[in-house]
Amino acid sequence: MLSGIIDCLSQNRNFLYVPATREDEALGIAVGAYMGGKKPAVLMQNSGLGNSIDALTSLVLLYEFPILLIISWRGYDENDFIEHSLMGKYMQNFLETMKIPMIVLSKTELSKQIADAGRKMRELKTTVALVLRKGVVE
Amino acid sequence: MRRHDAIKTVANCFKEGYIIGCNGLISRELFDLGDSARNFYVLGSMGLPTAIGLGLSLARPDKRIVVITGDGNQLMSLGTLATIGKVSPKNFVEVVLDNECYETTGGQETSSSSTNFSDLARISGFRYSAYVDSLDRLSSELARSLKTKGPILIHAKIDKDRTCPTRTEINPRKVKERFMKAVAAN
Image (tube, each protein chain N blue to C red):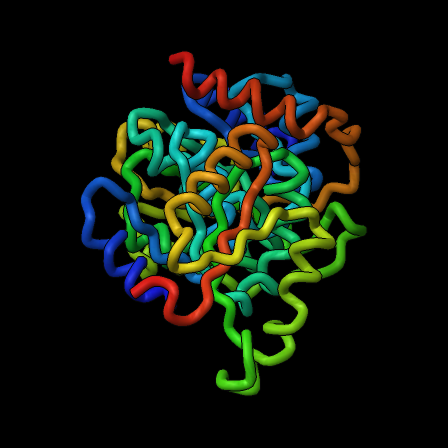
């Protein structure tokens, strides 16, 4: 789900793409980049949300860093591998509990939804999660 | 070598730079030694100070960035050394203060007595790394780091030290805002 976006970002010189070893590390890098004046986004599968809870609560949300999260929704339905099934069910609750606004992307409203996310981050000074299901982007 | 003296030496050497202090006693000590808008105190997110320093180094290659972290903190994120080796920021310096324990939470043992952070950095792709066990050696390696291309890691063995500086009582959002102002200003 994210491979097309990653290919695009890593080949475009207007973006600095950093391959992190873990999702929470990526959040740390994004926080540093933000403090240096960049507008960072972190891409992860929702399995990585589990790895990121402390980074989100004790760094990103605590200090109010508006970082864009792009999360692929593994385990959205029963057509995915079993190891993704529980996080597939719980992801929304985790995000809601942390009060992270979540926008489930749809093919027809993509640009409006992304603009909304940008506005939310600027106005609320908060992190926003764009959630990506299979087939929404190539 | 005492933690207090080691941090003071790093702060004095990097007056023109920007310091990321790791959570726990290291940030508290850094704060006690002299609060500055150029210091970013990481209050939580153990394991991430190195990644934060990396992100800042990449965004601002014109600034000198130093991360002061501990052995327990760095052991939580050895993978970040590989990321740093890969993207290789020239302005990145990391000082690992290694007392072989989690001093902040009561001195429980870490596994660093058998870990050579300097070697780990080198084989992960850092341009320069060193091991020091005295204040004099730390000073000379820091002075050298100002003239050498990064990424650089200095592994500094320090004493166990239960003296506990006061907790950094600054609002996290304010720490962020003034640090960002300081980064943008110069």
